[in-house]
Every structure is written in C-alpha cells, then in structure tokens.
Length: 196
Image 1 (tube, rainbow, N blue to C red):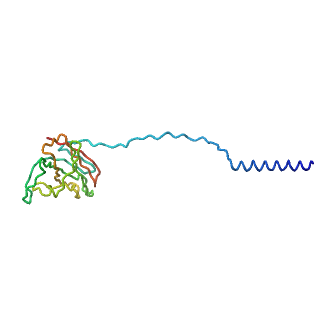
Image 2 (image 1 turned 180 degrees about the vertical axis):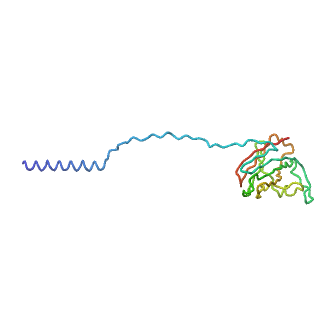
C-alpha cells in the first residue's frame, strides 16, 4: 500500500504544480508602478497685436515700406475723363482717400512688391473699396489705387493713388476708420482715423 500512496502523493503534487504553473501564466497579477502626475494643461491666448490708430496725414512704416494716408474728399457726381457724368447711388456720396507708398530701403535692396486690401469700417459695418472700373479709373484727376497699388517699388521711389468708397451722404467720418491690410509684401494691418 505504501507504494500506491506514494504514487498518489507524487501525482497529486505533480497535478498541483501543473495547475499552479498554468494559472500563473494566465493570471499575471497587475503590479502598479508609480508614475509622474502631469499638471493639467493651461491655455494661454495667442498674443495678437492691435495696431495703433493713426491720424490722417501720418505715416506707417514696416520693413522699409512707408504708407501715408494723405487726405480724403467727399464728392457727389463728377465728369469722367471720357466726358460722362458719374454719380453715386441716390442718398450716397463718394469718399475718396488719397494714399502714398514709399520704399525707404537702401539703393542695393531689391524692390518691394506690395499689394493691399482697403476697408472702411463705419458704425459696425465694413465696406470694401469700389472697383476701379466703376469710378476710380474714370476720374480725370485721380489715379486709381483700388487694385491695391500692386507695383514694384525700388528704394527711394514712391507712388500714390486714390481709393473710393460709396458712403451715406451724411456720413459722420469721426465714426469711421480706414483699415489697410497687406496681402503681398511686408505683412501688416494698419488703421487710420479721419481728420476734419
């Protein structure tokens, strides 16, 4: 009997070992390791610079490019260089704005090629300048700049032109600002207020 009980004893131990080994392969206990706790992210708004509002007659400069809001004029109808009378819509006037662009760089510098968008902000509305073929190109005394002044400009040179907006005939220019924004050349947005 002893032999038989030793066999059972060995078999029991062997089966127990096999069960323990098979269970340990299947069920690996999860051992947590300490990890660094990261702080929650903080959100910082991007810094956006708001341009200072310049007065009519002043110059804004960036990267050798100088832009000056020279003057403005309110006008009704005018006789075009082709002899036609051109008028704004009934109850409206034409606001003409004269701008100058100058390259202040060195004579060895490449020319500046700059183009602009023009917007008139008035009483929470924004107006785009009128297209040159409607008014600007037809005026006998005012060269159009409505296309954005997109010409090469070598150092020491300047050019100027007029842009035009159709505004209410009773426009309060103290409530209006001109925004000039480059879309080619030195990048900028600049705001001017109107002088009286």
